[in-house]
Each structure stands twice: as structure tokens, then as C-alpha cells.
Amino acid sequence: MFTQNADAVNFCREGRDRMFSHLLRLCREWATSIPHDFRSEHMRTRLNELLGLCSVDRNYKQKVTDLQSSLRSAINKLERYDKAVKSLQKTLAENTQRPLQSDLLVGLITVCSDPKVVAQQLTHIEMERFSMVGVDEILLALANNDLADLGRNRNGPMGSISFYVEWFNRLSSFAATEVLRQLKKKHRVEVIEYLIDVAKECCEIGNFNSLMAIVAGLSLPAITRMKRTWSRVEKSKLEILQHQLDPSGNFLSYRATMKAAQWRAESAGSSQRIVIPFFVLLLKDLFLVYHGSVRSLPNGHLNFVDVIDRVVEQTSR
Image 1 (spheres, rainbow, N blue to C red):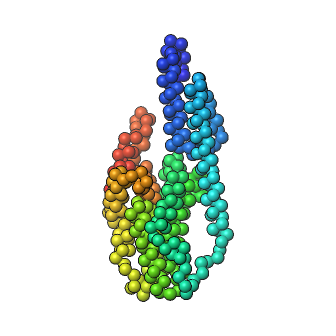
Image 2 (image 1 turned 90 degrees about the horizontal axis):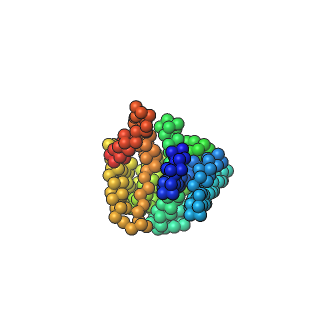
């Protein structure tokens, strides 16, 4: 761009403003959409060099300063998140004490008896963890891993994906543990029905990741083999939720429910526009699209049309 405008005749004020505006817009979009790219000092230096070319007057200098400040805040947020999650994981790893069983009703149900409130809090956690997964992390995960290894690199550049997948597994284990802590059958029945109601509220909100985690936890062999306990549970609610986990037809039931949730979110208020997908299935869909697409055209350009068409086709099934 600078070579093309090196001629004083071409490099008029209008052309200069237009070029700097486009360049600044490109940098802003890049820094806003993929801040993970600028966690290295080298990339931040190169970006600042590029932005320095745009700082030709007071107006552009202010825009550059605002962009740099916004990027610093985003990077600091990512680093704080990484530290917080790793600290939490360390604490959990060091805590080897198993939850105690009791003749009394114990666990989450005694802390908050309202399933809707619990579902809302789970949704806050889901939104935080999902929002920290960067576009570049997903691309690296799709390009460098086999399908079976997605989300297992805890310490690499795909840490946020690993943290989010681990959260799903922990929530599933937590749901099962809450049931197993109860020594009395009536308490196990009460906790199972409580967790079913929490999962139902997650579905109503549009939090499908927590829904799937809780249902998966209640479907573990250690829980399903409690025949006498389940004989007292109103199983119709759970069966409806388990239908969402049915893999037949490429998770046809789940995808239909997701479509309905997306339609509802589009017509709802801003505070109700929540759709959190089943993250592991989303990764699988993207993996199949990525490896099933012709990514380069004969002229070397990226084949965006083919990739986008496959994304739409795969996720809308």
C-alpha cells in the first residue's frame, strides 16, 4: 500500500486518509477478534510498528492509542483468566479428600434449593469459559490434533479449550457425586429430581453444555444401576432430557432444539439472547468441516466459500 502511494501525485490527502482508515480498521478487527495473536512480545511490537505508520495526526493518534489500550486490557484479561484457572486446578489436584456421605441431606441442594438460580449461575460460568476460547485456539486445535485429542493440551496454546472441556467433565462428575453422597434412598431421589430440574432450567435458558454435562452425569453406570432409587424417581423428565443426548441422526434431536433456541434468542431481549452449544460436539463438527474441505484454490487463495458452505451444512443438520 505504501509503495503504491509513494508518488506524491497519488498520495493526496483523500487517498492517505482512506488508506490509513482501512489499515486501522484491519488492525482493530484483528486485535478485537483474535487478541490471542498478540500475547507474544514480537507480535505486539510488529502491530505497534504498523499502527505507528497511521499516527499521522491527532485524530489518528487518538484512535491508535484507544486500540492499544483496548488490546492491553484484552490480553490482561486472558492472562488473569489463565492464572485463575491454573490456580483452581492446582487447588483441586491437591484436595484429595473425598466428599463425605451422610444420613442427612447434603450437597448443593442444601446451599441453594432453587434449580433456576443454580442454572443461571452455571450459565454465567459457561459464558465466561466459552468467551475465553479464541478463534486461533480453535484453528490450532483443528489443524494439529486428531479428533480424539481435541481439548487435551492443557499447557499449550489451546489451554482455554482444554479448560472448557475439563469443566464439562467436572460438572458431570459433580452431578454423579451429589447423588452418591446421599446414604438414604429418599435423599438420593430428591437430589436426582433436583438435578433433573436444574438441567431442565439450563435447557430453558439455552445453556446446552451444562444440560449435557448434568444428564451425562446422571447417566453414568454408578447412578443408573440404583434400581430401587430410580423406581421412586419421575423418570419422564430425565428421558426427555436424555433424548437430547441421543446420537442417532447426528444428534438430530439436539440440533432441532438448538435451532429452536436460536430462533427464540433472535426474537428475545438482549438479556435473554443466550445459546451455549454442546461444546464437544461443536468441536467435532468444526473438525469434520476443516478436514473435509478443500482449503486452497488452484491460484493459492483460501477457499472460504467451500468452508463456509460446509460449516452451515454441518451445523444445521
